[in-house]
Image (cartoon, rainbow, N blue to C red; front, side, top):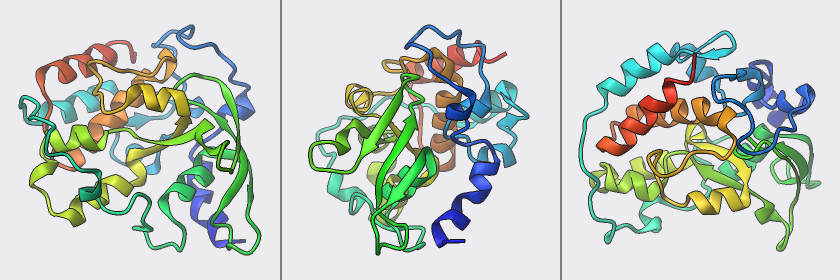
Length: 245
């Protein structure tokens, strides 16, 4: 077994990327938010299960609310000082498995993955994404004009994080957030671009079926890194959790 396949075997067993097997081909916004099936929601990690935020095949909204209540409140700070370079190199190999974080995420979230020969399964050439943000199936092909079809989203955007506490961090801690696999997801490129640095108050995935997973992961990362939440984003998360029954 290769280093890559061994690394992600546990995640695959937990249900990541089962959406293709299950035949998920819903249209954006047409799936009821309350009909969440975790097995069809890429991005559910062992850590979320371990922390009790996911129970069986559903989001544990009570546990997420308890986590949400622990996050301190603040108003968003000005964005003028934000600099992407303060979060370190874009895709550093911070988990030290020999592959950069972008390719790690592609290998985790895509199916039918092929790799560039001679890279020890570290450079993803092709694959298929069951996109959690739109519900569409997207073919990925590495290339200067094709790679942007599938992009890696920071669930908690870096500029947003900078406004909510990360401006006071060391560069090492900012780099940790920027490359944390719990905060990264392969998604539809245009959706990622439309999201930009918005929080849940102004942007949620077009596919309503992923909203519960999205706010759960968002809350988890914000709490894990001791960031803060403004009133609007907190309210949006709480409203979304109302649908996660």
